[in-house]
Length: 241
Image (cartoon, rainbow, N blue to C red; front, top):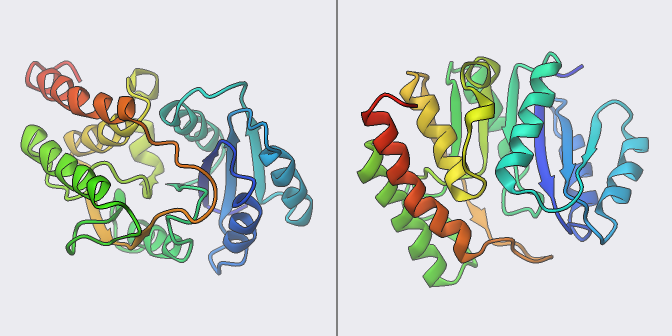
Protein backbone atom coordinates (compact mmCIF):
# COMPACT_ATOMS: atom_id res chain seq x y z
CA UNK A 1 0.00 0.00 0.00
CA UNK A 2 1.10 3.54 -0.70
CA UNK A 3 2.04 5.88 2.16
CA UNK A 4 0.17 8.79 0.51
CA UNK A 5 -3.55 9.25 -0.09
CA UNK A 6 -5.17 11.86 -2.34
CA UNK A 7 -8.69 12.84 -1.25
CA UNK A 8 -10.97 14.12 -4.01
CA UNK A 9 -14.48 15.28 -3.07
CA UNK A 10 -16.99 15.19 -5.92
CA UNK A 11 -20.42 16.39 -6.83
CA UNK A 12 -21.43 16.12 -10.50
CA UNK A 13 -17.90 15.70 -11.88
CA UNK A 14 -18.69 13.15 -14.59
CA UNK A 15 -16.85 15.26 -17.18
CA UNK A 16 -13.62 15.20 -15.18
CA UNK A 17 -13.34 12.32 -12.74
CA UNK A 18 -12.34 9.45 -15.03
CA UNK A 19 -9.57 11.46 -16.69
CA UNK A 20 -8.40 12.81 -13.34
CA UNK A 21 -8.16 9.34 -11.78
CA UNK A 22 -6.26 7.85 -14.71
CA UNK A 23 -3.90 10.84 -14.70
CA UNK A 24 -3.12 10.44 -11.00
CA UNK A 25 -2.66 6.68 -11.38
CA UNK A 26 0.08 7.26 -13.96
CA UNK A 27 2.18 9.49 -11.69
CA UNK A 28 5.46 7.94 -10.49
CA UNK A 29 4.92 8.07 -6.71
CA UNK A 30 2.13 5.51 -6.60
CA UNK A 31 -0.59 7.67 -5.08
CA UNK A 32 -3.71 6.03 -3.70
CA UNK A 33 -6.97 7.95 -4.17
CA UNK A 34 -10.14 8.27 -2.12
CA UNK A 35 -13.12 9.83 -3.91
CA UNK A 36 -15.87 11.09 -1.64
CA UNK A 37 -19.02 11.58 -3.67
CA UNK A 38 -22.01 13.46 -2.28
CA UNK A 39 -24.75 11.65 -4.15
CA UNK A 40 -23.97 13.00 -7.62
CA UNK A 41 -26.97 12.34 -9.88
CA UNK A 42 -24.82 12.48 -13.04
CA UNK A 43 -23.09 9.11 -12.61
CA UNK A 44 -19.82 10.31 -11.05
CA UNK A 45 -19.76 7.40 -8.59
CA UNK A 46 -20.30 4.85 -11.38
CA UNK A 47 -17.36 6.33 -13.28
CA UNK A 48 -15.22 5.93 -10.17
CA UNK A 49 -16.31 2.31 -9.81
CA UNK A 50 -15.24 1.64 -13.38
CA UNK A 51 -11.80 3.14 -12.68
CA UNK A 52 -11.56 1.01 -9.52
CA UNK A 53 -11.69 -2.14 -11.63
CA UNK A 54 -8.77 -0.86 -13.70
CA UNK A 55 -6.63 -0.04 -10.66
CA UNK A 56 -7.70 -2.48 -7.92
CA UNK A 57 -6.71 -1.44 -4.42
CA UNK A 58 -5.53 2.03 -5.42
CA UNK A 59 -8.81 3.85 -6.02
CA UNK A 60 -11.42 3.92 -3.27
CA UNK A 61 -14.93 5.36 -3.11
CA UNK A 62 -17.04 6.62 -0.26
CA UNK A 63 -20.60 7.67 -1.15
CA UNK A 64 -22.62 10.05 0.99
CA UNK A 65 -26.28 10.94 0.65
CA UNK A 66 -26.64 14.52 -0.52
CA UNK A 67 -24.44 17.62 -0.53
CA UNK A 68 -23.02 17.75 2.98
CA UNK A 69 -20.27 20.31 2.40
CA UNK A 70 -16.65 20.33 1.35
CA UNK A 71 -15.33 20.48 4.89
CA UNK A 72 -17.29 17.47 6.08
CA UNK A 73 -16.14 15.54 3.00
CA UNK A 74 -12.51 16.18 3.87
CA UNK A 75 -13.06 15.33 7.54
CA UNK A 76 -14.61 12.05 6.41
CA UNK A 77 -11.57 11.45 4.20
CA UNK A 78 -9.08 12.37 6.93
CA UNK A 79 -10.64 9.89 9.32
CA UNK A 80 -10.65 7.23 6.61
CA UNK A 81 -6.95 7.85 5.98
CA UNK A 82 -6.07 7.77 9.68
CA UNK A 83 -7.87 4.44 10.05
CA UNK A 84 -5.29 3.10 7.58
CA UNK A 85 -1.52 3.48 7.48
CA UNK A 86 -1.25 6.60 5.31
CA UNK A 87 1.47 9.01 6.40
CA UNK A 88 0.66 11.82 3.96
CA UNK A 89 -2.81 13.00 3.01
CA UNK A 90 -3.48 15.43 0.16
CA UNK A 91 -6.58 17.50 -0.60
CA UNK A 92 -7.31 18.02 -4.29
CA UNK A 93 -10.11 19.25 -6.58
CA UNK A 94 -11.54 16.96 -9.26
CA UNK A 95 -11.83 19.54 -12.02
CA UNK A 96 -8.15 19.99 -13.05
CA UNK A 97 -7.95 23.45 -11.51
CA UNK A 98 -5.20 21.71 -9.53
CA UNK A 99 -2.55 20.29 -11.84
CA UNK A 100 -2.07 16.60 -10.92
CA UNK A 101 1.66 16.91 -11.63
CA UNK A 102 1.94 19.13 -8.54
CA UNK A 103 0.95 16.22 -6.32
CA UNK A 104 4.55 15.05 -6.48
CA UNK A 105 5.87 18.44 -5.33
CA UNK A 106 3.43 18.66 -2.40
CA UNK A 107 4.18 15.10 -1.33
CA UNK A 108 7.96 15.43 -1.41
CA UNK A 109 7.90 18.80 0.35
CA UNK A 110 6.50 16.93 3.36
CA UNK A 111 8.27 13.60 2.93
CA UNK A 112 11.76 14.82 2.03
CA UNK A 113 11.92 18.43 3.27
CA UNK A 114 10.22 18.00 6.64
CA UNK A 115 7.22 20.24 6.10
CA UNK A 116 4.23 19.24 8.20
CA UNK A 117 1.74 21.03 5.96
CA UNK A 118 2.47 22.02 2.38
CA UNK A 119 0.09 24.44 0.68
CA UNK A 120 -0.13 24.74 -3.10
CA UNK A 121 -0.25 28.53 -3.19
CA UNK A 122 -1.77 30.70 -5.91
CA UNK A 123 -0.28 33.88 -4.44
CA UNK A 124 3.18 33.14 -3.04
CA UNK A 125 4.85 34.41 -6.24
CA UNK A 126 2.25 36.94 -7.36
CA UNK A 127 -1.15 35.97 -8.75
CA UNK A 128 -0.98 32.59 -10.51
CA UNK A 129 -4.62 32.16 -11.52
CA UNK A 130 -5.73 31.45 -15.08
CA UNK A 131 -9.18 32.11 -16.60
CA UNK A 132 -10.90 33.42 -13.50
CA UNK A 133 -13.01 36.58 -13.85
CA UNK A 134 -11.11 39.56 -12.44
CA UNK A 135 -13.71 40.05 -9.73
CA UNK A 136 -13.20 36.54 -8.42
CA UNK A 137 -9.42 36.88 -8.53
CA UNK A 138 -9.60 40.08 -6.49
CA UNK A 139 -12.08 38.54 -4.03
CA UNK A 140 -9.84 35.52 -3.45
CA UNK A 141 -6.61 37.52 -3.23
CA UNK A 142 -7.94 40.06 -0.78
CA UNK A 143 -9.67 37.32 1.24
CA UNK A 144 -6.25 35.78 1.87
CA UNK A 145 -4.82 39.20 2.76
CA UNK A 146 -7.73 39.72 5.16
CA UNK A 147 -7.10 36.34 6.79
CA UNK A 148 -3.41 37.15 7.16
CA UNK A 149 -4.23 40.49 8.82
CA UNK A 150 -6.84 39.09 11.23
CA UNK A 151 -5.11 35.86 12.25
CA UNK A 152 -1.44 36.92 11.88
CA UNK A 153 -0.89 33.59 10.14
CA UNK A 154 2.00 34.10 7.66
CA UNK A 155 0.40 32.47 4.62
CA UNK A 156 -0.26 34.13 1.27
CA UNK A 157 -3.02 31.66 0.29
CA UNK A 158 -4.93 30.59 3.36
CA UNK A 159 -8.03 29.54 1.40
CA UNK A 160 -6.08 27.19 -0.90
CA UNK A 161 -7.57 23.74 -1.37
CA UNK A 162 -4.48 21.94 -2.67
CA UNK A 163 -2.75 20.86 0.54
CA UNK A 164 -0.63 18.00 1.86
CA UNK A 165 -0.78 17.09 5.56
CA UNK A 166 1.48 14.79 7.50
CA UNK A 167 -0.42 12.20 9.46
CA UNK A 168 0.77 13.64 12.77
CA UNK A 169 -0.91 16.96 12.00
CA UNK A 170 -4.32 15.39 11.49
CA UNK A 171 -3.82 13.26 14.60
CA UNK A 172 -3.09 16.40 16.65
CA UNK A 173 -6.21 18.27 15.52
CA UNK A 174 -9.56 17.29 16.98
CA UNK A 175 -11.34 16.74 13.68
CA UNK A 176 -14.72 16.52 15.40
CA UNK A 177 -14.34 20.15 16.47
CA UNK A 178 -13.72 21.57 13.00
CA UNK A 179 -16.61 23.99 12.59
CA UNK A 180 -16.67 25.23 9.02
CA UNK A 181 -17.69 23.68 5.71
CA UNK A 182 -16.53 25.98 2.88
CA UNK A 183 -13.62 28.38 2.43
CA UNK A 184 -13.45 28.79 6.19
CA UNK A 185 -12.75 25.06 6.57
CA UNK A 186 -9.49 25.51 4.65
CA UNK A 187 -8.56 28.49 6.81
CA UNK A 188 -9.45 26.71 10.04
CA UNK A 189 -7.32 23.67 9.22
CA UNK A 190 -4.28 25.78 8.39
CA UNK A 191 -4.78 28.06 11.37
CA UNK A 192 -5.03 25.18 13.84
CA UNK A 193 -1.96 23.52 12.29
CA UNK A 194 0.01 26.75 12.61
CA UNK A 195 -1.19 27.37 16.17
CA UNK A 196 0.03 23.91 17.13
CA UNK A 197 3.51 24.90 15.90
CA UNK A 198 3.60 22.58 12.91
CA UNK A 199 5.78 23.66 10.01
CA UNK A 200 3.43 25.09 7.37
CA UNK A 201 5.02 26.00 4.03
CA UNK A 202 3.78 27.23 0.66
CA UNK A 203 4.96 26.26 -2.80
CA UNK A 204 3.81 28.06 -5.95
CA UNK A 205 1.22 26.45 -8.21
CA UNK A 206 -0.72 27.70 -11.21
CA UNK A 207 -4.47 27.47 -10.62
CA UNK A 208 -6.52 27.05 -13.80
CA UNK A 209 -10.26 27.62 -13.76
CA UNK A 210 -12.25 24.52 -14.64
CA UNK A 211 -12.93 23.86 -18.31
CA UNK A 212 -15.73 21.32 -17.76
CA UNK A 213 -18.53 21.11 -15.23
CA UNK A 214 -19.95 23.75 -12.90
CA UNK A 215 -18.25 25.60 -10.05
CA UNK A 216 -19.63 24.93 -6.56
CA UNK A 217 -18.59 28.38 -5.25
CA UNK A 218 -21.28 30.70 -3.90
CA UNK A 219 -21.55 33.86 -1.81
CA UNK A 220 -22.58 32.04 1.38
CA UNK A 221 -19.35 30.04 1.35
CA UNK A 222 -17.37 33.26 1.00
CA UNK A 223 -19.40 34.90 3.76
CA UNK A 224 -18.63 31.99 6.09
CA UNK A 225 -14.94 32.68 5.57
CA UNK A 226 -15.22 36.41 6.31
CA UNK A 227 -17.00 35.98 9.63
CA UNK A 228 -15.42 32.64 10.48
CA UNK A 229 -11.95 34.16 10.52
CA UNK A 230 -12.98 36.66 13.18
CA UNK A 231 -14.42 33.84 15.28
CA UNK A 232 -11.19 31.85 14.95
CA UNK A 233 -9.10 34.81 16.06
CA UNK A 234 -11.31 35.53 19.07
CA UNK A 235 -11.21 31.88 20.18
CA UNK A 236 -7.43 31.84 19.81
CA UNK A 237 -7.11 34.99 21.93
CA UNK A 238 -9.16 33.41 24.70
CA UNK A 239 -7.47 30.03 24.45
CA UNK A 240 -10.56 28.21 23.22
CA UNK A 241 -9.10 26.59 20.10
